[in-house]
Length: 124
Image (cartoon, rainbow, N blue to C red; front, side, top):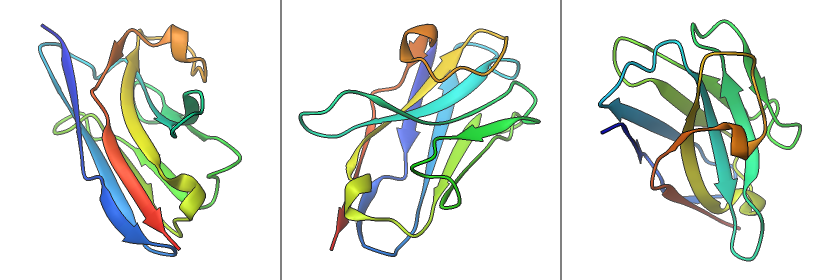
């Protein structure tokens, strides 16, 4: 069974950094588009960043551009999210997701496999 497991979440003060990781099992995700989404309490799930199958094309939402960086290492964990200059507004559960090989997408419904999420809390 294909599974994605996120790690690296936690509590941090505003201005701090965290690095999220996403480990895959049960399948070869090296060619899949990998994405990060987040969901804050009472809000809809929001696209954060995505990266193409070979890590050539990263894409980030405007709200995190310049602060968050998505990358992947297909030999180890499939995708990372380096988060710098964190703000209280970044507080959410962060989800890793995989979409079948193709063009990058920001749409949650186009991702087939999801992790359980990891909580990120940023205090002011």
